[in-house]
Image (cartoon, rainbow, N blue to C red):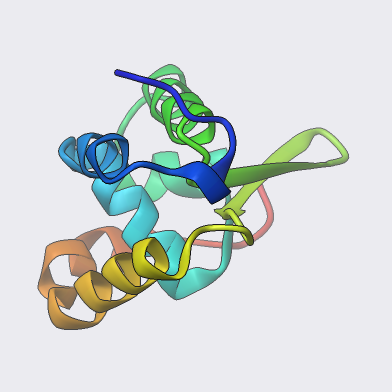
Length: 114
């Protein structure tokens, strides 16, 4: 996957390649609805191992789609605040109009402090 660490220069091809994988797409859609999630939240929600989630988050970070913040021993992720408007609109509209795609993952979300 090509990388683009500067979200302001995000190219459409890179963006849509990042969205083309189920785990990455669900992660972005969940972040658009929940704002910020830690790795443990995502492992619970998506029922995947921590290494697999972390690998996909690293890909999203390299593409400039998410930003991570360390809070104590936990790392939290959010949509990158400098995402181009067109990319943010695609993510938010996809989440709004395809809620059933992430409804099971959202139901699995415990969000009760890792």
